Image 1: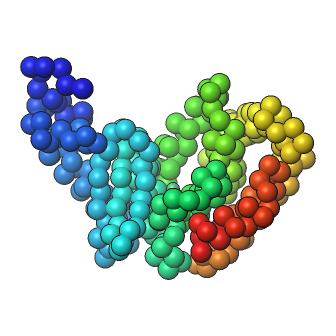
Image 2 (image 1 turned 120 degrees about the vertical axis):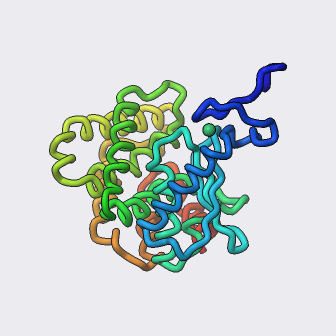
Image 3 (image 1 turned 30 degrees about the vertical axis):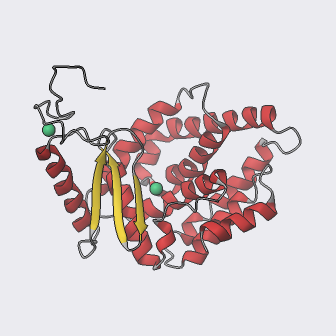
Length: 271
Ligand SMILES: [Zn+2]
Ligand SMILES: [Zn+2]
């Protein structure tokens, strides 16, 4: 809320701005909005996507997302988060172009099981990132983001849900093993291994509390890891069916997801 008498200021450069510019989701001045647009264009060019019209809405209050609805491509980019998020969202369009499959940038169908959507999306994010980390100096942005994430993984907040941490495990198991370059992997080996162990332990303990018979355990994680390890053999595919099959093969190992529901949901989310 605005305090009376105090003119609103831009969240980036602190210059005064008019109320009309201070819209609900973007608290930036025109100059700072232009700067973000130029940055998007720079990354878009590097990704070879300059033939596409991709709108960008800078937001301050949520995670970044990409969408394609009725042929209109939009990125909502949270400008308080690392630039990785902007490149990552562009990466969804890159993957979608490569596979000729729009659903890799579409928001989930309103009726789908959101838990399954988020697990599958965590895996999709690795396919998205592995497509652009090799481009010019974009890997630097990836590593900057990984270092921020790594420091956060040391202490998982007690209110974290099992779903959100399991999602993190699926995404970062692949990232730490198959996206990060060998020299960085070597340098960060202890931290990377510890972080994955912390996520795993949290998932196991939470699942004991929530699910009794269908809980996670170390043996199940071994199977999940073995399945995730197949990422290397499929990561370059341009066949969307291979990607969704990979997701399905991993998610079917999660004991508290019913295989029938999973099958239907994957068909619904990625028809
Ligand atoms: Zn500004
Ligand atoms: Zn994503």
